[in-house]
Each structure stands twice: as structure tokens, then as C-alpha cells.
Picture 1: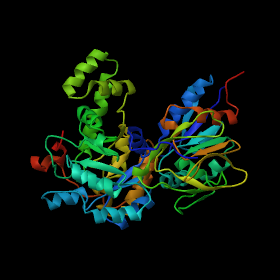
Picture 2: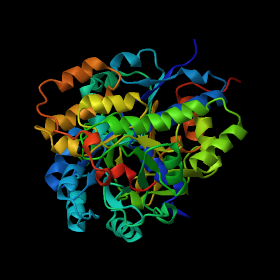
Picture 3: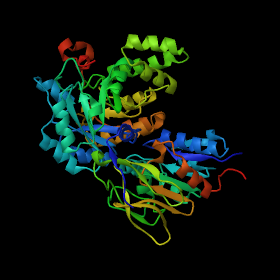
Length: 298
Length: 198
């Protein structure tokens, strides 16, 4: 039969793509070899980067979209979806990644923001976007701009889960606190959160964000990943935690299994045995304010 | 006791399938709360049918084996309803050696047959047994490039076969669970004897 009318890049297709990632682990990779390891370990997607966040921290300077050659190399190496990061507000970097054919764009605070006032209008793209958030207001503003997926910002490149926990609790706790409130009270709260009231009403009614909600920013061990799942994450992003560990292949497999069995401590114990060195990590409280990535974009 | 349905809950859009089946059961007057997530072999006991959701087929395939579900799924007596990755897993052959398929349907499947996410699309297609077009969501979808003689092809588009049925099993390259049209869930349930009384 002839397909009369094909529609591409609709809101449902973008959110639907994100739904297919649920229960999965998305891993940061910097070359084809790492991408193949991630795919073999059971990653649902990879994030193609020039440097993982821990190395972006070390390098300093302005962090930008990766070299398209690296992204293409990774896209050619795996059959799972490939994502890429662009600077907050950098419409052209997003256009470039869309033209390369990446499956999802992360408008990310890990890179140096290009616009300190506005995020990208994501509704004007066919490719779905994921954006970071520290609290419910931020999450709903991003969804209103067209994000098909939210992730906690956490504090990337630290190997310290404390900020991801804080942000997940901010989001889920606020939703729980609003259960049973009247529509008027919810609208009043929406004003305080600087969030569109219809989106907040929908969120409270659903008892969760209306898009897929992953956790990111500091997850370094199978237990960290399971912790975020127990707190209500739909899946996790693991950045530096895998390829900065002693045995990336085992760490990758172990985190995939820990996410799958997040409520079964026996499995988590088993996969955690003899995993070797997790990434060294940073105490978030020792960072200077200008080193804290989560303050970028709001 | 009413019917019990399961959704394979290893990875993918599990909650959407649970919601879809609950709504479909509600339409035929069955209790919708008997749709359960399946993660361990024991969970399959007493189920009339199982959905294998959309997701990443490489990941789900790996987790099926890790969780000791491969043999139990082959032995499963009920109907299986697979969408997208589920269709890939039900096939007899696939173009990717990383995916160990269940071989429940004699079809050859090509993963990501349309390309990357930017090629994902929605369109009205005609499906055998439905009296009006069905609005289907194809997300990095597979197609079947071949179906055996005993497999009934329910829908075909230019790129290949996108809906098939054999006995109690049904496999779709698209995602009825993302929409509100429950006709395909109803068609599946009818084949396993769950329909409106009278």
C-alpha cells in the first residue's frame, strides 16, 4: 500500500523514542571502541563525546560540541541509538547534530553555555532533546520548551551521587507534596516554580513527570545506579563512571544489571564483587562556585 | 478468577503496554488490574498472554538470557504480543548476531529498517481485519523482509511487512501501546479467547 501521509518528528515520536529507553543505561563514550564495549554490555544508547565530563573538568576552557568526525565514527560503530551534547542555547550546534542524524540531543550544562538567557526552542527540531534539571520548575520549563526527556543534572564528572540524589528528591518530592492539593493551589505553586500551570496540573495528576525522567551526574557504581532507580528514575546516564573505572567492561555490565534488578540487593551484591577501582571522584563541596556545572542554565 | 496478562519488564516501554492492556481488558469487561510485569521465570505462571514491549532489542535479548527467561519463554503456552523490539525477539532470523531471537514466528527481520530516529514516522496504514486505517507509530522500527507460509501477514508497507500473526502470537513493527486506539490489542485478546461476552 501507499502511505498517504507520513509525519516525522512529532511530539509523540520524540517522547515515544524516549520511552523506548526506559529501564536502560545510557553510557558516555569517546570513540568507536568504547561504543562497542557499551553496546556489548547492554547499553540502550551511547552519548558520543570528545571527552567525558571528568576530563572536561580537567581540561578547563570552553567546552563545545564534539568534533562531528568522532560522532560519525561512533554512529557507524553501533546499532543502538547515538546521542550528542550541545551547549545550552546553541541552536547551530543542535542543527549540526540533527543534520548528522544523531538520535537524541542533550542540551547540556556539562558544556559551556552559549546563551545565558534562553535554552533552545526544541519544538522547532525534528530530533528529540533531553535536558538537565535540578528541580520540578526547571524540569517543566524544559518540557515546555519541547524536551522529550528530562535527566537530573547531578554534578557531572565528580563520581559523587549526592547531587543527583538531591535533584531527584527535589523533583519527586515536590510532585508528592502536591498530591491532593486543589487545582487553585497547584496553579499558585506553578507561579512560584515559574512553570506553566497546565504542565504542573498534568504532572500532579499523573503523579510523575509527563516525559521520561532519567538520572545523571555522578553515578559511579552499580549501587549508585540502583539507588537512583529506587528513587523513581526511569533509567540512568553514566558518564565518567564507566570508562574512568578500573575495568570498564565489567563496570558497564554490572551497572546494566544493577538497573535491571534495582530492587534486588542480592543481585547488586553479586555484580559488585571484585569490580576493581571505581572512578576516584570529587567531594562536591570542595568545588569552587565557577566549577559547579549544575548552576548553568535554569 | 479472571485472565492474567504479563508484560516482559526488562527494559523498554513497559508501563505503556500495561496501560494499553488494562484499557483493552476494560473494554471487554475484564478486570484491568490483572496485568503484571514479568521479570523472572516464575512470573509467567498462570498467564494467558505476554507482551514483549518496545525497547532496545540488543539490551532486552541480553537481559532475557541473564534472567534465565530464554527457555521459559520458549515453553510459554499463552499468546505473545510483540511490538518493535518485541517483533525482533519473536522472529526466527534477524540481521544482527547480538540478538538471540526466540523463533516463535517464521519471519526474517531487519532492525532499524528505516534508519535513525529522524526517519521515525507516523502514518495511517491498513491492517487486515480492521475496517478503517490504523494510525501507526514507527520508531526506529524493524520490518520483516520475509514471512513463512504459515505466517499470516496483516500489514505491509513499501519497506516491508509490519504486522504478522500466527496462532496465538502477533508481532507488530510499530507501537499501538503509545496511542489510544486499542483495536490491535483487542484483536490479539480475541485470538486467545478474551472478548466481550455475547
